[in-house]
Image (cartoon, rainbow, N blue to C red; front, side, top):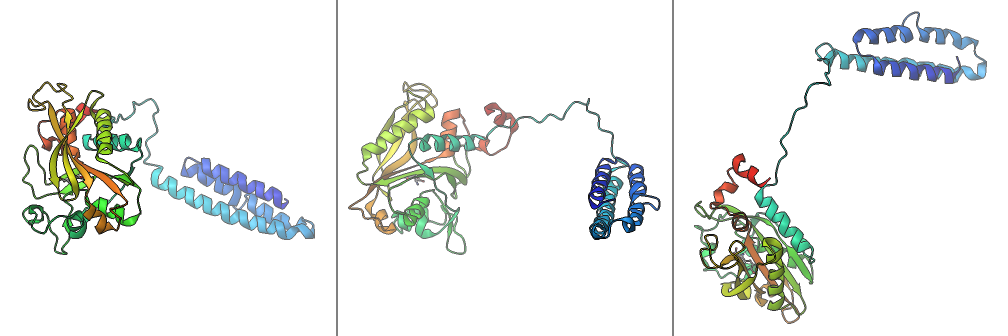
Length: 337
Ligand code: DAH
């Protein structure tokens, strides 16, 4: 046999090994190729009859056949030995296993909806860690040292002096420190407070923060953005209103209400008869915050907002108790599939 013929014989052997379904069939393949009266000994014997210049190549090929086929038989033998005798015959007529289609959790759904709505007007997503420095969570957000949120009864402080962030606002600081304006980001994430759990509070919850900084950004831009956001999130008839408020990191600060998407403002159980639902805190970024991150407050202005994801989920889907979002009760979750 020439070296090409030997190579072909080797490939045939490997193919037969692959389709051998039992150890007995595999043994038959071994005898046929490697056995005492098999093809390999014949090939070896025939080498000396080849023309001198072809002999070396054919010899190499024959050795290759011996080792590759030997290895393949060993490997296939192990597979069949392990799985072979115990393996159930496959019955393609049996009914398949049915997996119930899952549904997205309401918290994830709100985060996705908000991300998509904001992406359409140019906001990208920025991220920050759950364990924050006091500086980012409080000081750089212009929070005075005596502010109640710094109290150990309100915030989870770690032995390192860091804390579990109480809001997603510190991501504003991280983003602004990492790049020059313009900045247009939202920051969905988990927050922690030492709140006793009840129908509207949990020790951990989610917020989404928005931040837009550029030249000439005004409160009117904030209101326009919130109006767009409210319509996209809750329905085309929903309006927004601002009420004066205070946050250390915005000036002026507002509380942003949405008109009630259930009663259209007439007053109902969801809006507690007021026609309005409190959704977000917002305002114009305080110049002091710009100083902390190294932006020039004479050149740049910006707005920010922040709201609770659980709260929006409760309002939008009519939930009476925040705890249903964490109990993993399928009877609840399946309603929103
Ligand atoms: N971080 C605030 C809170 O947890 C919410 C908030 C208010 C965020 C005003 C803002 C903002 O970005 O401008 O109560």
